[in-house]
Length: 162
Image (cartoon, rainbow, N blue to C red; front, side, top):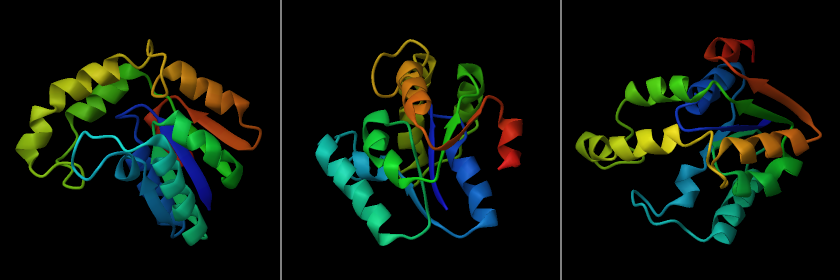
C-alpha cells in the first residue's frame, strides 16, 4: 500500500488512515510532523519537508501519507499507488474539528490546543476561497492532474468503502 490522503483540516484523513491500517500494516506520515518544528508554528523550509517525505518513502515499503500541503504532496505523487481526496465540505470539517480530542503529538497540553481552536476554525472556513497550497482549488488541481488510481470522497460515510 502506497497511499496519499489529501484534504482540508477536519476532513477525516487521520480517521481514514486508521481504517486503511485495519486492512494492511503500513507506516504513516502526517505531513504536520515534517512541516513544523516540533510543537511550534515555525514552518521548516519547503525543500526540507519534501526531502523528509522522500526519506520516509524510501525507508518504508508500505505507507500512508496524509496532509493538506499540496506543494509537498505534488512531488511525491509518482511514488503513490492511490491518491484519495477527502472533500466532505467545510461544514463537515468544522464539525470534526469541534469534536477533535487533544492531539498530544501537536500540542503540549489540551489547553494549548484549545487556545488554537479559533485559529483552526477560521482556517477551515477559508478552504473554499483559499488560493494557496491548502485551498480547495489547489487540492482539486492536484487531484485532477494525477493520472494514477484516485478516488474522491464527498461524504465520510464513503470512507468505509476503502
